[in-house]
Image (cartoon, rainbow, N blue to C red):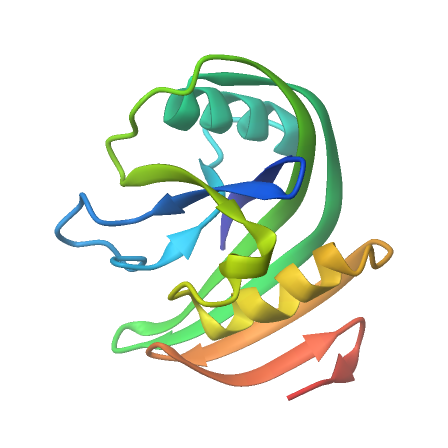
Length: 158
């Protein structure tokens, strides 16, 4: 299992999104996602969050919250792959936005966000975030890039 973080930084009605277009071999190629990445060494989720956000955006978070844990299970030719993703939102930051070597950063209106290409499971947890759901556990099971099962707090929802 891999441990990662993902953060949706908000500014009023806008969300900072990363359009993953710069890496050739990228599972997220052409998708719009939040910012984050893999844990290094013995980092805690918040240490990983702060480091990844700074590395990818140049911003230092000043107000953030862990909103849930998403478990990804993906069937691959080499067997199942798993990831625990600590999902955050942030509404306070300082610094100047810089360019990112993983894609293009853009402030996007939440009203427009649903129209952007993203993973099917992202739509589930984004709705939970925007509906201000309490802390949640979400398991998303993919076959290749197709979501085949979703379990929210122990209950099948797909």
